[in-house]
Image (tube, rainbow, N blue to C red; front, side, top):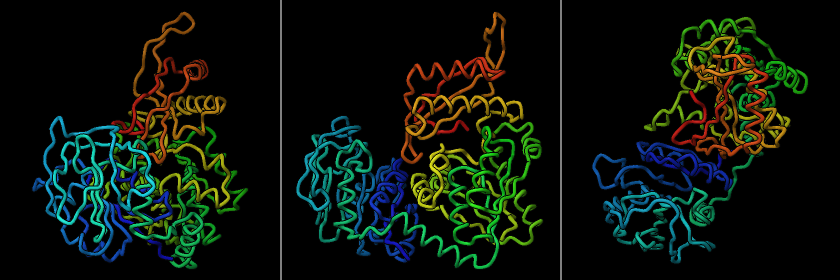
Length: 511
């Protein structure tokens, strides 16, 4: 079944993935495309609606991101947000100009709405602004539908052509009733039916996999994390024993992770599972390597080489299955977007992969969607709600050169940290928490003796999808217990620090 589609056209805005998430929360399938996408490609996709994102540029400058005016003539409803709103105004003959101290707006702003289909049912007047430039005159054929004290065109519409623009960001939580505005655009303007659901995804994906794989065989890269686990169970539901899962213990896993993976997938799901002990191989390849991207590439390539070798032992395996999810794809570079970091299952693959095709059944999904799929497939909650774990594992949580000694220290510290979070009832409240081992030693005093030992960093973030996050405010008494236990129970550690950086400007992982 082909689902209704809304396209998010990315003009470099920091909230592009958040807009897509908000659309999907309304049961509408959504894809992000760069602004360089050709109009013909957009037409072929036959979207029900289009949303222009914000961005850091000025619409009136020649070098700024643009689209052809033809986009407004294809008969598809369009919502412009922030820069997208300004670009719509500029391309259609309105006036956009540089702001000054009186017209620029950042943060929570009071707004006065006028009547518009997109504002139906909106009862609050607080929005989130983030702009210097502003629309001083709406294009011909447009009505001004909202103003603020400093912004004469805070929203506008051309009802006949189904073109809508808002200067603020309805996708962020600080814009009260922003969810209603987006829902109005989707259901009242685009007239979607809302056919994107967990059940429909599972049924459609299983049918798609069966049609593609047929009676051929597939090899699944199983790490034991949420993404690869859900991918494996979904594939197994589709092709049964034609799926073989390879679980590589590369020495970069969390404490007892290898044992737990074997128990779940062999016993509960009766899958064909091969466990490969490759700690020495991976650590050997990583010896002397300190640069994060180099480590990711090495780990990604070794994964594939191990799979190829196991595949040859089993006979021809035509397909390789991976747990790639949408944020992996976006962060590894979407169109003209900047690459934040490569992911081992996206940008870290060698070019000469010895498989007919790579299947990524979760490639379109955000993390919370993956979890919902997993629960519906019958995967137990304690696995589904495990915090995200990077494909390169402890290889990027040990900062600098990776050694067995460092991994062992970090495993113990992380296990203590997770144990205390669970005891405090905080584990499920936190999007992601982990310990990291910087390439730093510090002076300490233990047992009246001077020590020179490792520093452990701990991190915890609150997020809905991992694309943006804030550091989690763990109570001081819990932090105290975590620190005391790590220092007392983890040999080689004499100091614990807590990371209080949000994303942006930082990433969630340290490398």
